[in-house]
Amino acid sequence: MSYDLVRGMNDLLPEEVAWWRLVEETIRDVARRYNYREIRFPIVEYTDLFTRGIGEATEVVTKQMFTFPDQKGRSLSLRPEGTASVARAYLTHGLQTTAPFQKLLYLGPMFRYEKPQKGRYRQFHQYGIEAIGSLDPSLDAEVIAFAWTLMTDLGLGGLSLRLNSIGCEQDRAPYHAALRAHFADSIGAMCDNCRRRYDDNPLRILDCKEETCRPFIGTAPGPVEHLCEECAAHFAEVQALLDRLGLDYTIDPHLVRGLDYYTRTVFELISDDLGSQDSLLGGGRYDGLIESVGGPETPGVGFAGGLERLVIVLQERGTALDPERVDLFIASIGDNGRRLAFELTEKLRSAGLAVEIDHRARTLRKQLALANQLTARHLLVLGEDEVASGTAKLKEMDSGEERDVRLDSEVLAAELADDRRGSE
Ligand code: AMP
Image (cartoon, rainbow, N blue to C red; front, top):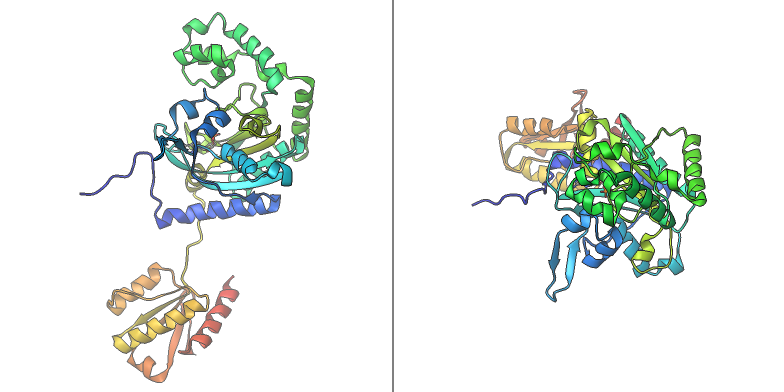
């Protein structure tokens, strides 16, 4: 009997991991330049953190969480996103008093019980940044600039940035009233979810994807029309800073995003290459989140993006990956050759080189085929003559050039390191 993969979860074989490493290394490099430091937190949290942090009425919380009791009956959930956990960690470690301003990066698996399709999985991976402790619009602009820099470094085009401001807590009531007035006549013809949202949180109606609802949503007023003076000024400054950087964006008056904690700035980066699951990343400001999970009033802004989607876009764009090459392959003939090859391989690995031999004791022809498959930079073939003389021909695979070398690990390590420096 063999086992199936759990639906919506993926294995990543080494060829695929090479893409992930490219993306992860690029993210870490951008984070270094922007001074966002990595934080790691558990995959499991008390369910309540997400219910209170993300919002009781959100799709993520009502339908998508993997929730289960622990041995003592406490409700735990696999994390569906990272921001609530970052807020929890901030408070757990008392950062609000010791180091209230934080710029943090995280990467890791998230879990949502969604209908799997291309670009949407039940275990997926997010990278995200969070800047906590300041209301300054320069941070909103910085996290957006971070996202653009990352895309530029990865060589990605065909992207559009959608931007909006949904205002603060105080702006909600007048905006909700305006939305209810707008939908008052049409709500009877709209879907069940929207009818429920009409009473609970009419802002959520703007997120509805149902065909029957879309026409009524198209003409709805945007939150920007109902911003208080402070929020309007904040949004204007975010735009002014983005304009300074020459960053292209479109104001999308109906962009509200799916999680309840957002306030003021919200944004999303969309890719032409992703089909229906076209959102590469999304984020915004969450000035009420830390308070809602039990901390003092603390502003924050950030975004999260899907690693799977970045990898898909890179692959579809035909981005070339550098092959992972070994520095040396040592082929051998006979027992003495094989033992010497084994010993030299170990010593050279200790000296920092990537070296491989054939562990399946096969013909020379098959060993050479393996050397090619591994795109080895150099080749040694050790037979009885080489063992006896203590020298062999070191072949540089790309040029085909050969030179005599002593079969001494220190000499060889120096030769190979020289060659590697020359070819870089
Ligand atoms: P969200 O946390 O919903 O704002 O999502 C932020 C980003 O995470 C999205 O733009 C996607 O790139 C990615 N993402 C969200 N849900 C999934 C999923 N189920 N599978 C793959 N990627 C996802």
